View (cartoon, rainbow, N blue to C red):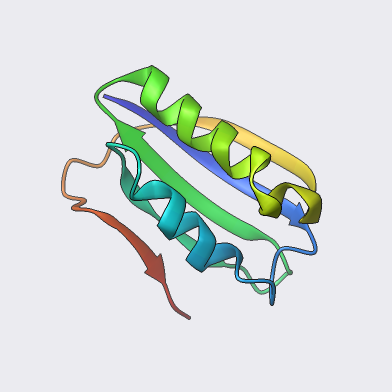
Length: 92
């Protein structure tokens, strides 16, 4: 299983970023979550059995209308979390 932990910086809160990300995730075989951070960034965790699926999902986020709001992306390789089901929005 391949997992990525991603931090998005820019005007990524208050623009429907989390909801759009969840909608985009529905087109991929990924599990994970997305949430707002107190410092104005958005944090995302995504995983899939196929590494290409995770990469394609993250690329679709950048190619969507959300891409215009993103100024910086930090991607980290992460350990998989087999307890996750679906792709969810984590609320504060």
